[in-house]
Length: 103
Image 1 (cartoon, rainbow, N blue to C red):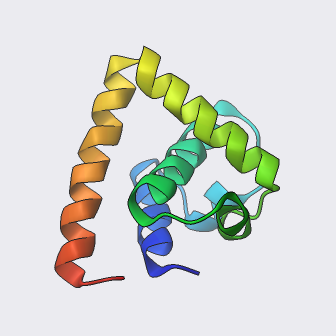
Image 2 (cartoon, one colour; image 1 turned 180 degrees about the horizontal axis):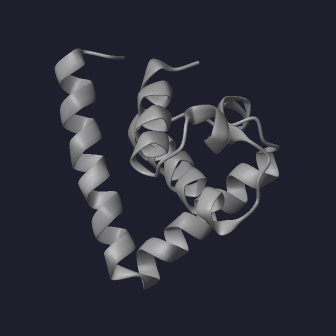
């Protein structure tokens, strides 16, 4: 697993009051789905990886990863507050991950 994916997953989980294991659980309610979708989007955006790689990280099917990426992008496009939050996370993770030298 890409170490950047772990950092992103952990931070999003903690910021939303969950453990990483809770965020990876099969729960489908909004409280879990939105942070998970955001984490998937941020992992792709910041650390890269194919849909198949992200499916392994998030313990989902590739189709679920595609859905999460599309949903997160739609939320960014239609919800200014969500877009601001994602932008803040992108700046944070780029600074932290570059500072640590995590590749």
